[in-house]
Image (cartoon, rainbow, N blue to C red; front, side, top):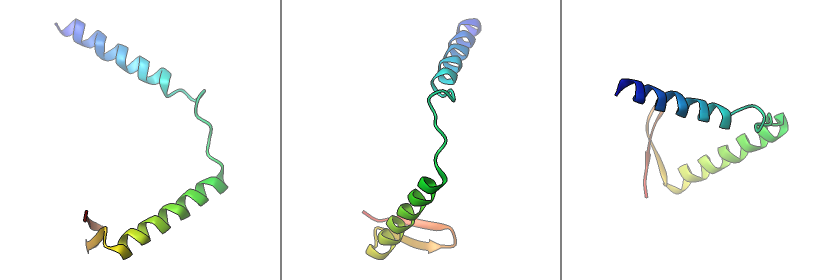
Length: 65
């Protein structure tokens, strides 16, 4: 049982490694990274202003639906 379990685990890990290889991942452009950060910051501020997200403490937030 343990041999079979180990082989399934190692097979899954090797498949995952192949899928996440650097061949398919292109590094993000610094300008694009900054743009995405700014868009995310604006989205976060809008959610806080509208009440969808509520600040309940330092580094603690509540999602209101």
